[in-house]
Image (cartoon, rainbow, N blue to C red; front, side, top):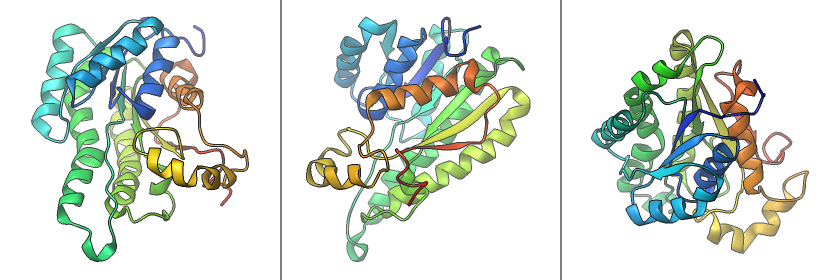
Length: 255
């Protein structure tokens, strides 16, 4: 078995129609996997399929994952199409910035529902499909997308976002211990600055500063995110679980 070969593997990438999710979906396709991308907006899914289909078999299954019922429905939709799922990427997320004095309750509800609760509910809903794909030698994989802002104190007033990502990192460790005996690994990646719609305004204003904060002198590229996704999903990552991997060019680890 090739260390980085995903031929025959089925992957689900939430928030897979843009940004980091799209980068990871492309990487999984280029490694030989079949990918389902999910997004709240059907038209976004259609655009992603148009962009990704030249790299491999890809389908869109729209879902609003901010509620548990939709997490269950998405799993049921997959079960109607596939006998098993080898890789679940919990990437769908949201952020909200506002001053401390005016930071609203609605921000906490929106961000924690999508960034922290949805990965839990979705992983639980997908357990039967993941277990069908899992073996001791080749576990099924759950990959959570956290953030270096869950590892450090961020510069921006994104209180719910950084708290949700720190919570997701801890949830990753808890689920890794819980699901390891069921031959499912659970890991998280903690991206630094990457080109995405969520980061577009910040990078337009402060991209040079972010690049300068990395020892490598740049922000992330799609290949950087695709690479870590393939590493964790393929044979190369079969004995890695409970890890939170910064993918940030050293911004956090050398701060």
